[in-house]
Structures are given as C-alpha cells and as structure tokens.
Length: 348
Ligand code: NAD
Image 1 (spheres, rainbow, N blue to C red):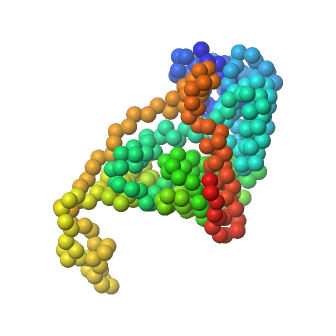
Image 2: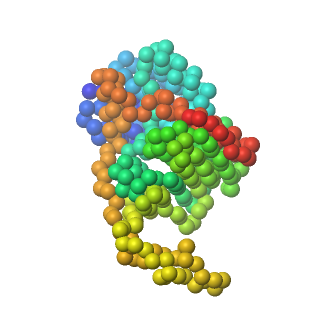
Image 3: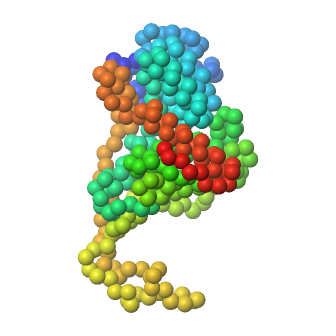
C-alpha cells in the first residue's frame, strides 16, 4: 500500500482523492485544507482530515503529499513538505517562475526526496494521438503544430483572476500546452513570441497566442482563449506529406494526405467574386487519401503508479523536475516577450 496525503481539497484535490480511491494499492491517508469546511466535506466522503499543516506533514505513515492549492502556495508548501521528509507531487504550474523552482529543486536534492509535477495532460488521448501520428511518420516531417484550447465562459472568478495568486491562462492552461509541445518536439526551443491579452479580467491574461520556434525548424502556435464562441480545432498539424486534425477533447478528427495519383492544377479552379485561384482551390478528391485517427488507450492514473514505482523501486520518473524547469524557463521568456512586445531568443 502506498500512502498519500493531499493538501488542498478544492476542485483538483477532490479529483486526486477520487483517483487514489479508485486504485486498490494506494491509500488516501487524509487531507488538509486551510478551510475547515473542506475537512467536513472530505469527512462526508469518509476521508480523514488533518486540522493543521504540521499534523499532515508529521504523520509518518504518509510517504508522499500532493499539493493541490492555488499556485502562489506551491513554493512554500513544497519546501515545507520536502523538509518534513515527504516526497512531493506538486500541481501545475509548478511555481510562478523558474528561479523559485530552482530553489525548490535544491531542497529536493538536499533532502533526497522525490519531486514531480502533475503534468497529467501528457496522458490526454488527443495529445497521445498526435504523438503517435508524428512518431509513426504518418504525415511525414511536421513543420507546423497548432495546439489550441478555447472556451467562452471567461476565467473562473476565483484566485485564477488574481495576478499575485499566480492567476492567468498562461500559468493555468498554457503550462499544459507548452509542456505537451516540448514533450512532442525533441529539439531545443529557440524563439518565443507572445501576445497576452486581458479581455475580461484586467489583472491577468485571459487569452493568449504564443509562437514557438524550435532548432529543428518546426514552428508551433499555442493558443488559449476564454472568450471565443466558435472554436477552432484542438489540434491542427501540418507535415510534409499530410495534415492531422483533432476537433476537440472527444477526439473526433481525421488525417488527410496526398496519394500517388498526380494532381492536375488546371482542374477545380475556384472563381471568387474578385478573381480565380488555383493555389487555394481544393485538391481533386482522387489525389487525397483519408485515414482514421489511431486508437489510443490511456489511463491518467499511470502518473501516480509511475511516481510510486520511482519512489519504491527507483524506476524512471515520468515527469522529471528538469523537464518542468525547462517549461518554466520558457514561460519566463513568454512573459518577457509579452511585456517587451518583442520576440525572445533562447536555447532551451
Ligand atoms: P481550488 O480553489 O478549487 O482549491 C484550492 C484549495 O486549496 C481550496 O480548498 C483552498 O481552501 C485550499 N487552500 C488554499 N490555500 C491553502 C493553503 N495555504 N494550505 C492548504 N490549503 C489551502 O483550486 P483548484 O482548481 O483545485 O486548483 C488547485 C491547484 O491545482 C492549482 O495549482 C491549479 O493550477 C491545479 N489544477 C490542476 C489541474 C490539472 O489538470 N492538473 C486542473 C485544475 C487545477
């Protein structure tokens, strides 16, 4: 049995609790939340509560604590938990900037405790489909990846709207999408250029577009919108022999690629009111092949299993601190790009 405690029993703490309770070889030993009402809520579900931080950190049964608190508390609680001898799974974004995270990594090294970040969207089916298509070479060499998440409800009106709490969409969804892209593209990031907008919430970015360039020549667009009423596809990936599109989290979509039938340029010219176009006219149907998206099985609970195995058996950690640090350094550069209104060159 692997014993885990959770600090912060809000939306994500509740999710972690359900995941842990669904795995027979894990024990959700208890939770701590600064808000006593949350302890009552946990008790209703039969989950034990600790009334102070010291109490949960000093419970010797607990091997690992999960930190599911607002972003600005990640640093102090990570350090407190590591110093108390606990391994730590920290929610994303791991910290508000890379300097803070470097301090925490040092404490993790000093104490010899394991540290990982819950980058659970590496287990998302849509992401794993893109990864498989690229690894299989189905659309040839990719040159452009668009990864977008879009909603129209704005930013939840909680700490996510407050800059000092680590609010804003770059740190919220952006960190997932950047982590995914950097996991997908095995090449250093060499340039970022970002527009961060505050459309409805003045203190934080509630919409952003980020261009990333990689050393291997690939470019990526990462976009998060919270006030868009007509969504673009979740993924649109261009390779030199085809295109992949995934529409949404339900993972509908398709792959289209050129087949061996030669295309005739003079057929299918489109006449617009302003003139004809051959370049932007659709390809003749017989010159295209449509493929179904690959079938993917994924269990996001493998994240916890991997962490436990890394702790008990020394197996390789799936989400390593150095990977999260690289992502944080890119995020630092994205904030800098938005602030200076210019692109930032880097080599990460
Ligand atoms: P939330 O506001 O729903 O819950 C936060 C909880 O932490 C609250 O119950 C609050 O009382 C408690 N809390 C606040 N300060 C505390 C402190 N100092 N000590 C103990 N408890 C404290 O927020 P949430 O949506 O659950 O987000 C929590 C974290 O999880 C954030 O870092 C967020 O980015 C992350 N998150 C991750 C994912 C994911 O997919 N990985 C999804 C949602 C949220």
